[in-house]
Image (cartoon, rainbow, N blue to C red; front, side):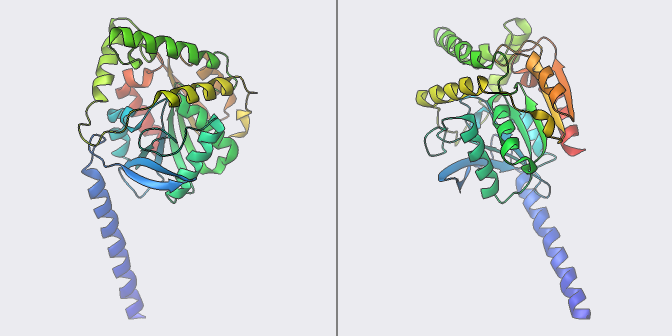
Length: 304
């Protein structure tokens, strides 16, 4: 009996030490330095970055149209990593992830589910931005028990008015970016007033903080495929969001040109356990313009 007791104590000490070592190792990283890893899921090799505290349910970040790993805002990622394990990844055919781009938002959701299970998780929290919010809703439809909490920013519901128009607006601002030698996100994510332009410059500067081992650039072929998937999804029959009881935090700017701001109000009415934050004088990238405020609200939501 005494030996069993001593063995149990030793095992607990070892587990505590291992967890502490894991968290200490994770703590030395920022999003600018965390290494890229790979895992096989749904027939592809998925590129991902993972850091932060590992003893809790992880947070999976679902990113926007044509976003690779370097398009995650390091301020938001680092702030969440201080409290939770945060994992970002490249969609199929994006960046360093293999395979051809998924043909539909539903396909992307299946890949997301496979990726989560390949990492060994049966439940996660999700932070999703723009197209990532579309994918998250499809995940809820397929495997609702997989998601414990969700933050949906700059996004809207399936079949939402104006979602198919994302295609034309995106191509227009890509063209504008080419003529002005600017990243299209400067126009797509932010208002074109003095405050919005300053926020855009600050945000795009943050995305360049990672100096080594940056991700592979997104191909034009992938942009076309994702645009078609978004247009098709926007024209599909609306989803019944009232059946999903999980806590949901919905955020957006008050002047979102890509996914119209009223769709955020629509979603908060349709999810039975949702709260809403609309940031003033901001566009699609409201959470990036107001990243300090968003971080405080997101961390409080994810840790309560």
